[in-house]
Amino acid sequence: MTQNSRPRETWSSRFGVILAVTGSAVGLGNFLRFPGLAAKYEGGAFMIPYFIAFFLLGLPMAWVEWSIGRYGGARGFNSAAGIYRSIWKNRLSPYFGALAMLVPVGIYMYYVVIEGWCLAYAWYMASGQLNFGATGSEQYGNFFSQFTGLASDGANYSLSSAPAVIFIAICFVLNFVLIYRGLTKGIEWFCKWAMPALVICALIVLGRVLTLDHITSGLGFMWNPRTESMSFWKAMADGNMWLDAAGQIFFSLSVGFGIIINYASYVGRNDDIALSALTSAAGNEFCEVGLGGMISIPASFIFMGTAAVAGTFSLGFVVLPQVFATMPLGQIVGTLFFFLLFLAALTSSLSMLQPAIALMEEGLNLNRKTSVAVLGFITVLGAAFVLYFSKDLLALDTFDFWVGTFCIYVLSVFQIVLFGWFLGIKRGYEEIQRGAEIRVPPIWMFIIKYISPLYLLGVFAFWIYQQVITPRGANRFAQIIDNSVVMASVGFLILVGILFCAFVAQSVRHWKKQESSGQQHLDVGDFGGL
Image 1 (cartoon, rainbow, N blue to C red):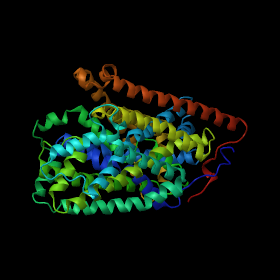
Image 2: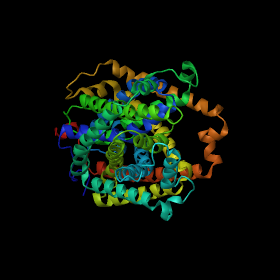
Image 3: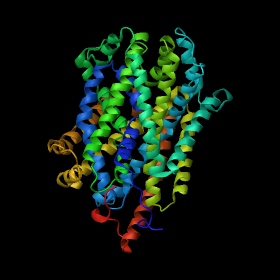
Image 4: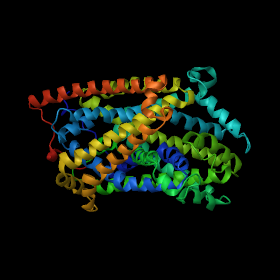
């Protein structure tokens, strides 16, 4: 079967694609990562670089990815490698598509592990096995440590940690069953019922949190930009905070992943993408700030104070269960909270698999079953690696930084330059506005071409400088040399990246063969809307 004879998948409705993109964006980043980072930088101080990053990076990148995704899709490509190649006629361009596979797949390898924890905690909360009372902080910490194998490498493969592996395996199977069902019957079908259920659960939990005594002090911690440990301006000079804020925007909106590009490639030529991109971005921010942040940070601050409100996993899996044990109806609220975490994680992890599937189908000419099997084998190895090197969650943290922050930065810089300088602002703006129900102000094109790339490079350069002057033990580059687990983790990711480069190289040969034999890819007018 040639590329052009393969049945082309499309979304069944505009509402479905918006929910799918929003589902990809709304995940653990909203309910765990964002509250953890906001608490790490003492609440309100973090919100300033966070919102600056949203307006100068997140929203522009959303329009960029929707437009170049649809542009490539109109030419017969659904994979990032093919889409990049259709825009920039350079032999190097499709190899950035390997990075667009490594980012979501690399994140999936540890994300599915945390997803399993969320499902397990929902079960343990519902069954009462996670209630150690309001004063059992040490017991909550010990439970999390034993459950996740935090004490030593290989602990997850002992009988005492078998429940964790079982819950992770359930999540793994669910992801691949849904991705095997395809775009409409798998991803879109699941997101159509999971997203409303998630929001309903979150609103119920938020309603209970907002009725707590002294809630204003908790809200003040989240929104007041003053910090207790340092001056405001010293806090603003922290390069790590600006990098984390920008990285959180990328992670949260799923921009820089290669996911939205893939999803947008399935929409029709004249379907609205300007309002769809804005709607999905706004929906994500509502879930992240209005639900995730407003649930976790104020409640934890009220009951535990500033000392306990620190660290993503500590906040989510140690502090919050103790908070739920303290409040009336806490068992119900806690069960709903961890169940919504599971739903949010599943809608996101599902989206992380589709970009790689798309390349294997259109570039390697594999059928769905074989593509799913190959990707399943790769991700099983990665998840098993993260599970084995569980001591202090070092492998997970290494994957999260180098793929979930560093590589996303690199890919985002490439994509925004691709749009602004290779596709061109004029053609790019025309693509955004085709079929649009809103008019994107032209000033955003100036921001995309000049401000966003400079902002990205400036924050990145500032972070590099701070790494150079950072003590060796905390230096991300030095850790690769000094720590064998970090070295092995980075090495594993490099090997996966090399494998994806090989996939791209074979895909390019396949596309060239098609083109030389006259089997050209579709052009803009070759298909209509949904």
